[in-house]
Length: 178
Image 1 (tube, rainbow, N blue to C red):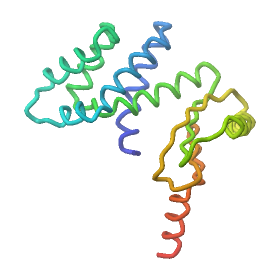
Image 2 (cartoon, helix red, strand yellow):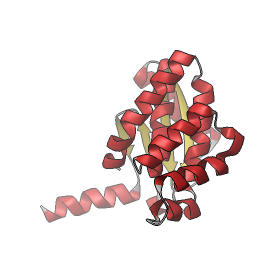
Image 3 (cartoon, helix red, strand yellow):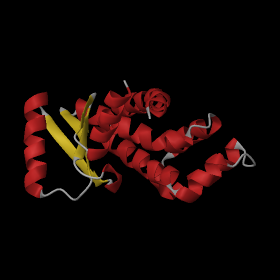
């Protein structure tokens, strides 16, 4: 994941800079969100990995799927990413872009990944705790990952709090092997 973040960061920064200059942060968030969903699709992932498709064919197909969800600059971004074989980085580019956007708007983007659904009371408690820690508004995205077994992982900026059973087992295994 660190490698994908390293690949995605310059693209996210470039798009953010352009979006801020154009005062179009929300429009770019929508375009990146659409492109990220398309790139994350299993069938599209197979096409992205297909060596028989040229970069141009791949970009044209990707743009066609996105349809009117991309403007001329969004289509150009897809062409650049396809040319550099970076379309698979789109979900991470989108995530990093949203973090930059939130920061610029005075908020921080946080993600709560839990093994089971989280109640509204629990979400509010986590939100309040993160607001207190960072001293600004927090936007919390929640998702479920049953592979965590139990507990949750919170990511906010550079902060990662791993309270999952899977994480605890991994730390225990590391401690026992040393």
